[in-house]
Image (cartoon, rainbow, N blue to C red; front, side, top):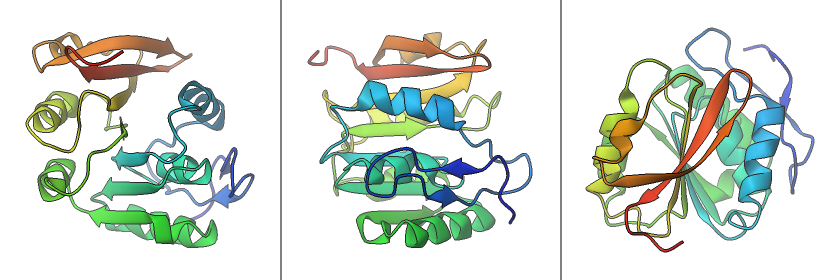
Length: 193
């Protein structure tokens, strides 16, 4: 594992610490600039929150949340190589004691987490063009790990269409576009604003 595009923690207790990333095309690290914009939007929601990072890759998003004061993060990733990378990054940033790393596929993890915690923020950055989001949203909808206050963020390519979020029981209440991708912010329908 060599460091590609020099990712780092942007703010908080682990600020400026470099993170390892994984070589290859299986994971696409969220660029620092985009990560910074995202976390600026979530600024008031992060302190003390429980953060679920699905398709974690190198763990950069979950680690950023912890660095900025999340009480706990669960990072889900089914690639063995990526999980090693996440664990190294958590140890290096001294945030491992606040994180659980689950080496399994996302749907199994959602199932496994039932009855344990309600997450304040769920972030997912699945491989593009595979339509995993629909299954994940359906699984979240049928689980007790989210409630009407949970913010769900999906990172997707710009032309991705998440119209089905509606039939899965979610409202898309905000979309933030970047050059090559976008973040969609969802909540359960009929949620508290």
